Length: 93
Image 1 (cartoon, rainbow, N blue to C red):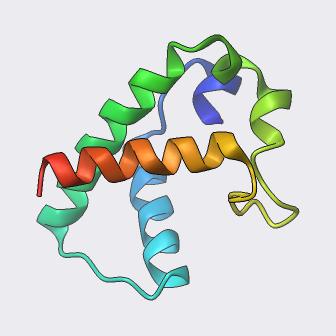
Image 2: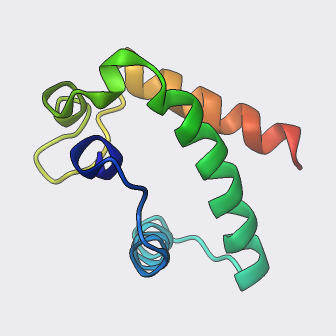
């Protein structure tokens, strides 16, 4: 979403904060090297999706979230993104 709005990737401090929020809200833990590895993998997946026409449309992207800015897993697009992320993780396990 940030890239579609600003044409720039998240700053490092925002990425770190987003990771902390996600870990806390999902009851997960990761050490610093795991977080760096995840950031690298997430960048790869994000770059792949950023090249698709719909992923530059902020109105389209906003529909992928619920009211609380949580991803809406009822959406086939969100499930596709999740599957791509899972595939990337499995390929680097």
